[in-house]
Image (cartoon, rainbow, N blue to C red; front, side):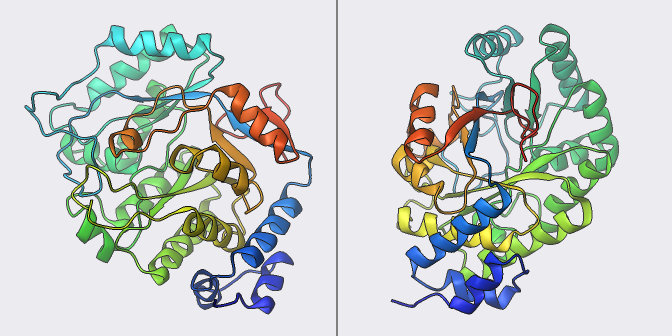
Length: 361
């Protein structure tokens, strides 16, 4: 076993910034217990309150049509495919109504790079949602969809974001980041936006006062150094804008994808990478667990490996499920998992404000 460097861990625990070489040394170690202890200490320093948060939302995929052709995706369909769809407004509204009835305060609205849906379609969609459901937050689209929409509509990214914000877009999910290294992106998603463009969309959104999450999907063709490069690029942008609310990472799910021959990363790799992210991302207030890919038990462990948030009840999830992973949990089960980890469960919104209005520390 390659042990983690105690001096590096102590540096992170004390609040001093790690450099890329130190991050790489940690992620190349196999000392899971030491990494977990250090990440837990950082999480407790940043969040000393005796609670851990979660939210209730629904991942609504308004279409499965996408021209990106990402090799890791089992969900998308090419235009004209027999099972390609775009949800009708009635279907979408029923899903939102059900979400609200179950206590949800937001929807995660994502699709793909549809070649025929222009910005006017999205503006109409958002205006209708806000008119019918004024209290629901639309956490929508993600940087690759925004970049595609700007190209399709022949508009600057900032104009697209301004128009969507006026129409009702509330926050920007961090989907489509995968690994923010173009060598990796050329291998797994060569037709998707570059690492620089992904970051620029977020930068422009933050400049408009928008907030959103940052993500990482790992455990495919990237190297340990490229995981750290991804974290470094996020940390630099967060230094610049402060617009990221949280970081979420998960392991690539290979089943039914063009990369199905790759071995599936397990809980050890997930918890190790999560812990290193908590130690490295010193300017991110919140780190979210990914029980949707890991299951409730590992999600609970994540609360001792740097995560201060359990993620979402997620009333509906289709993309990970299409890749053969389908963990489900009720709100009661999530609350129970948080309690069993030694914390009080509290519901929050996408901006990490407690549902009763008291902002989380």
